[in-house]
Amino acid sequence: MTLMETTPDAGTSAVTTGSASVASGTTPDAGTPTVTPGSAPSPARQAAQGWTRVCRVDDLLVERGAAALLGDRQIALFRTFDGRIFATDQIDPFSGAAVLSRGIVGDRGGVPTVASPMYKQVFDLRTGACLDTQGKDPLAVAVHPVAVDDGDVFVKLVTASAPAGSAHADPAHAAPAEGDAR
Image (cartoon, rainbow, N blue to C red):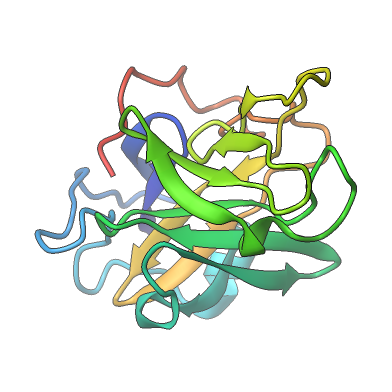
């Protein structure tokens, strides 16, 4: 089975698990990757592959963040004005507070961003890189791949050993291409 995965910094790619796969694609209305009808794995198989269903796309307000608890990890989900969905850790790396979902969602030169409500550092939602350190050492927030299947939002957590701002903890994924096709 295959989920269409949105890599935070590379766009859309087909993620193959097992023998089936589908071509890369996007929904015409939102630009968020999806799976072809009937190709979604069962809930048990999704969990085995590391994907966790978080919510429905319609549960996410445009230009707002939402917090979710996946196991013992807090994440923040963001739906941008153009319909793309991003997931980061909820913890602000500068303050240690679980507040990123309450940040200001926007863009900087076409790059989707969130500004932390604590000290106002701005993070690239695709890579987790801090774009505005406010005079502090640069830190990044971890980003997580997002997939949409039949209106359900799935997140695949990167492992703690993956570097902050990396798209995947899985080395099988290729280096990201320039741009964001979500």
